[in-house]
Length: 178
Image 1 (cartoon, rainbow, N blue to C red):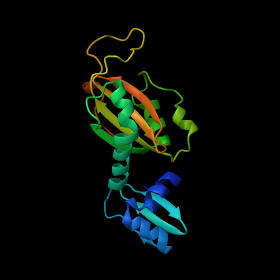
Image 2: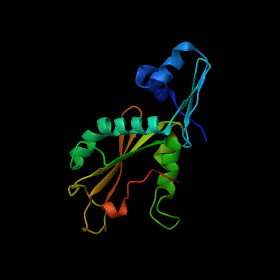
Image 3: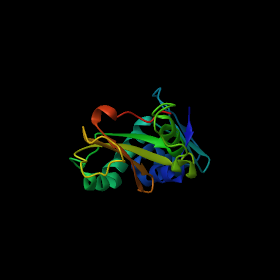
Image 4: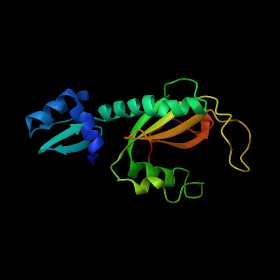
């Protein structure tokens, strides 16, 4: 099912990172199709309808996690300058995920700040492994097994939001799903 993205994704397309998409931006109306069975995002510009493959979106998420997200992750205790996983998403999908991921009785955000963003705003979900021992725990939280994984959310403009910390076993590197 296509998802409309915002102008930041359009900048990605027209900046030449995707040659086919850049050609479509210059040459006027035409449609490129996706051969994958995975979802794609639609971008409209000058009458052109361009389909981005999920691989291109994943690459973009990886770039955001490896650039904007990495300095924050390393400052917090990540082992390396590379995420262990990154996933593309949108503000609406991240909000739904944050509000529902721990089940109906689990602790969770009841009204995510991501709801204040345009729903189609591109967000990279980034997982980093490391020793996050210096991170302050919530009152009453157990001291062990320690924080070995961090999830950071990186918006298209490079804004980094810390999501959560925990043991690797409690935070598997999976894409956000509401």
